[in-house]
Image (cartoon, rainbow, N blue to C red):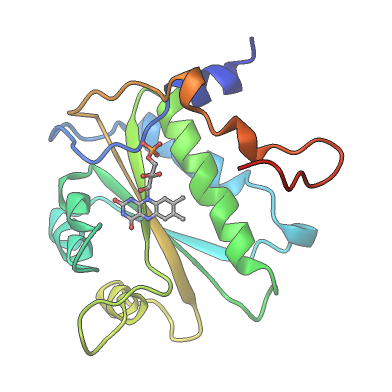
Length: 180
Ligand SMILES: Cc1cc2nc3c(=O)[nH]c(=O)nc-3n(C[C@H](O)[C@H](O)[C@H](O)COP(=O)(O)O)c2cc1C
């Protein structure tokens, strides 16, 4: 069995973390994962902000009314942004990195979870992207796509059982309209 499939079988989104920091070696591995991510035409439109400072993590936790608060507990938040002028499919490029960080963290025995920033509100008057951009001094032309919060898991979640996988979403040779 491939190691990748084994990691996928175990992986879950983790939102509770112990206060233990990541080691320099772990942070270096996560940087390497980000930098080895494939991108369209290898244009690499992304930039990554690795945040471990507690005050900044607290601020990132307030990015959205829902779904970002756990960032405050993380040892590390990787903010993934990109310059759309560099590549038309920058969203896909950033999504690949977020996915690889999530899987790579799981493979390293760490927990992690994606926080969607693009298209999400910060409050009634502003969007989460503008909020994160201003908190981290990100240039105006950069889009902030998502944040991956990473740390030592303080919750246990079982992988999704094989029997619960939505197998009907797979069509053979052509779209099957009789499938649910
Ligand atoms: C595109 C995308 C956006 C997500 N945004 C958030 C988010 O803002 N906050 C959050 O807590 N989880 C977020 N998640 C995690 C999902 O909620 C999670 O993957 C889903 O509920 C399935 O749970 P599992 O990863 O444990 O299988 C996001 C996941 C994806 C792929």
